[in-house]
Image (cartoon, one colour):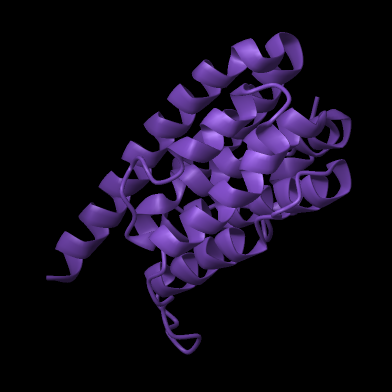
Length: 192
């Protein structure tokens, strides 16, 4: 099943976790601490009061990641990637409803794939990430391929296991964050 189909079929928790995981993997671009989004993850695991806590946690994350984005005129790959990461954070819905979350999860999926595409040293054969999300994976660059696999796996885990899949989803997100942090660091060393 393609990523687009998985997002279309995901329930509210799956959508929230999908968008959150994409944002979590991009925290290195926002200058954030690895634990900054942990309260949002915890709110997804709490039945009943998660809706109320979600909005508070979104506001706390925004306050904790209140670093200025790269200037819009910054045409470097890192600058464009940082702008996309800020847009993901800014678009996080305070109200955890299906419609809000579906739109956010979809936008986060596109942004995260685009960020990985911008930062990948290898060239990606497709002209846009839309083809990747629909299942066309021929000539995909390694960093984009890994991000696509993470996004698909997280949605599959949550679909199959519900709340019990959150821990594994968080683990995949943490792994992806480490990979992106290493890529950003390597690119920074290359400019010195």
